[in-house]
Length: 162
Image (cartoon, rainbow, N blue to C red; front, side, top):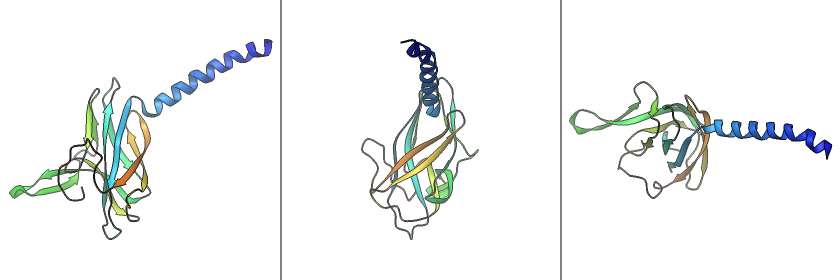
């Protein structure tokens, strides 16, 4: 019994440290519906989409993303060019703001994580690891489900591969 009492303070410290470490991994960010559209190897680029909800008390920013599935990864957006033609560009400033208490949707026809120089085909059913780098929460790994169409419940806008 004495041995158990001596170990009790150590157990309390380990539990507290364990809880703190797991909550700081993602803070109060909720990242859902992570997916990418299937595309053959001949298509050099692809994109990943998701919803990010910031349940923390602080504004957050998505700074960058990375994955072994792409040669280069950038944060992009669709925008209206002259003559009502849609274009795609890297997000001005290079980051996506996620205000506290709000949800930001990275979606077809809007903001997205752009995969440039795909390293292979994106096959339906494949799962691709993507690391999202946030200003406050740090690096968070998400798993992108490769599909022919977006998950139900997400707004879909028609538009190319971005």
